[in-house]
Amino acid sequence: MSKIWRVAGINFDHLHMGDNLRMVFDHPSAEIVGICHEDAAEMEMAIKNFSLGEDRVFTDYRECIEKTNPDFVILCPATARHAEWTEKVAEYSLDILMEKPFAASLEEADRMTAAVQKTGKKLAINWPLAWYPSHRTAKRFVDEGRIGEVIEVHYYDGNRGPLYHVADKVEVSEDATGEKSKSWFYQKDKGGGSLLDYLGYGTTLGTWYHGGKKPTEVTCMTHIQTGLEVDEHSVTIAKYERGLSKFETRWGTYTDPWTNQPQPKCGFVLKGTEGTISSYDYEPTIRLQNKDFPEGKDYSVDHLEPPFQNPVQYFIDCLENGKEIEGPLSPVVCRIGQQIVDTAYRSAEEKRTLPLLGE
Image 1 (cartoon, rainbow, N blue to C red):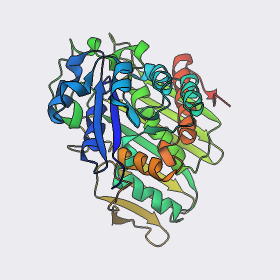
Image 2 (image 1 turned 90 degrees about the vertical axis):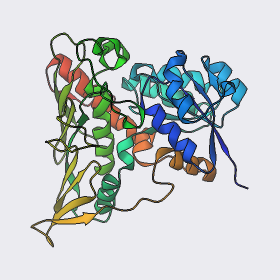
Image 3 (image 1 turned 30 degrees about the horizontal axis):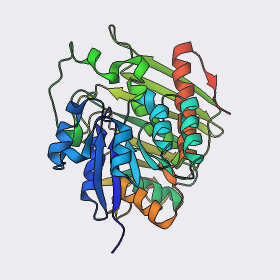
Image 4 (image 1 turned 60 degrees about the vertical axis):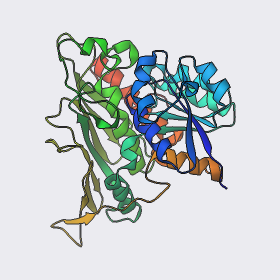
């Protein structure tokens, strides 16, 4: 019989913990052996959804790890606490799957990488967009040379706002006047804001599409609504050797892209030396334009097979087969994405163009 991977989910700050635990629950070779959060109330939905007994529910992470003996840990803390929680779990020499973004700063991202490297274990950063069939199909087309060398990445993404939904995209009503101040998503010291929430998606997958290239300069503007600490809208322009790429984040889209695509559509448009590709979130086709189809042609997205359907499948496959973490989950690719995010964040604060930080 194949090994059953023992997985613990620690820190429920980010609502994606419920989504990731469901992937563990559905995996034929994995089980949820423990969940942990300082506030037990935050785990109620997961306890119910996955029928977890009291022996698998903890409010102290050390007790959780020591009593359940997991093979790896899924972490979903607030952005500004990613380094702290990675270092805590790394003390137990465990492989770590961290939910996006990489970190609140490049310094913290480097702390995370260093902490895990000391143990010889693996660190992966999950970006849910990396598992959308449309964006994977677009990368295949790029790798096949259908649009030549990618010289522009145009990214627009977001949702109505983080208070409109919980795990599994279950919708809730938002009290716009009373709830924002209570949520870490709207607290600057916790790493809140649409820029830190969504920009890393675009810059990390953008780096993937760019073949690992880095920009030389970055300019960013944000909009912070009166009464809020953090932005709900950001626009970043990155200057590369052969062109400009644009990354835009938005809390406040007219609709959520998983229900009805807003306008502008959420996703990517890639311009290459020999064509273009449009790849939008959740859509069943991507559109290719090149010399063979100057008018454009729609292609059905690839049907993804395990282990490329979700991060849990992929991470377990890498652990089972001794593979390196690659693509958008790789700390190497994610670090370039984080460099752009850091530079954009500081650019917005200083209101000027900056050279890429962290070189």
